[in-house]
Image: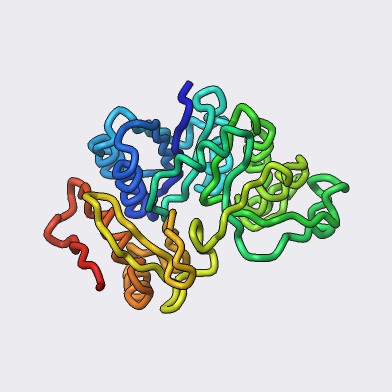
Length: 302
């Protein structure tokens, strides 16, 4: 069993983001940690690229049809990953495929090994569970809970197997599914809303360690003012700071339009150095069918 591991889920749409994420993991960790990639209907060309990635034998590719519940979408697959990894890894850091690392996460893994569930706040307000959440348990109705992000989530599966098991179970009956989750219809905004409801039901509030969202997962979205500045390049690693707070940026999340789309590239062009950071990691180890000449190089703004 691996002591520490990363895990992510991707379909064909998110593959450009997945590639940048894997390159960022390799930049800060090399092949030291196991990286599990769960693919949802990935084409053969994407699978071939993954097999040639510099992570090499430290990367494990899993088809989501190998999971206990044969998922019909990436959200459902994501809900099944922690349960699948029980017995395969102790502490797992799950990262969405539209994120990249900007630092090592050794402190995050250490907190999780102490029994904490590490994530970032998603919004500044606690979540109120209304009568719609009665399907989970009557006791959940009326509960307030700090809403956290499932795109960045690190936990010990030895300590929190119950959360992993219920997150997988509810994926079969989520109200976001085409069947509306009959006969239960577990409510919540996607996999994240369901995760929060389960964590609240299990009384996990005391073990939540929620980090500032602007440094870890900017769910508010990047803008001309809410942005980051790239101030240093050390080989394949970057030194990036949040402009408003002057804090060291730890993760970068492509909130809003995805950075690899034409819409996203136009949007992020006016959002400081956000796009520049993503492009840096995307270009570190080009995919076999991409032209390296088309990749932009980094120029620091003084």
